Image 1 (cartoon, helix red, strand yellow):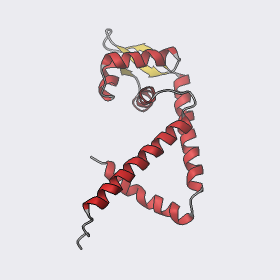
Image 2 (cartoon, rainbow, N blue to C red):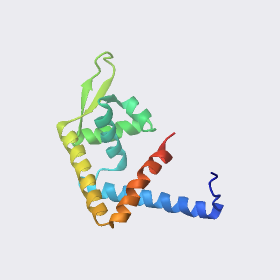
Image 3 (cartoon, rainbow, N blue to C red):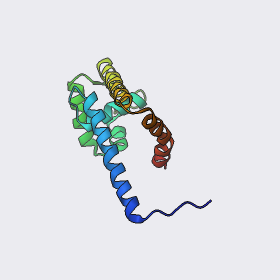
Image 4 (cartoon, rainbow, N blue to C red):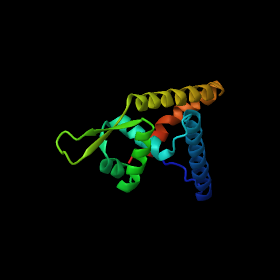
Length: 147
């Protein structure tokens, strides 16, 4: 069975609306969960350390596609706030590893809970048929994000 060909203008409009909607949803999630007013780079570093464990400045910079000097500035700010801490590298005495502190881990956990609670409340405002449509779209959205 062949798929109907959609007009290019219709696809362009859909892409614009999807991009804007996803961006708006992400911004809303961040604002609902960011009572500490950290910037996106700081939040991304905390998330990466939470997911991957201790990392060097260079490894974090590569992962976040930024210069090591910029990452050093971000880490210094997070360290000053008590969200990350330094540890010696176990095999290379010239390197320092950064890890989340208990305060940083608690912040990440609170942010995650706040995002989930806001999204649950927002979804609960939808009609049952809309919830089913949203649930049905999840596999498609996942496929779009695959390499």
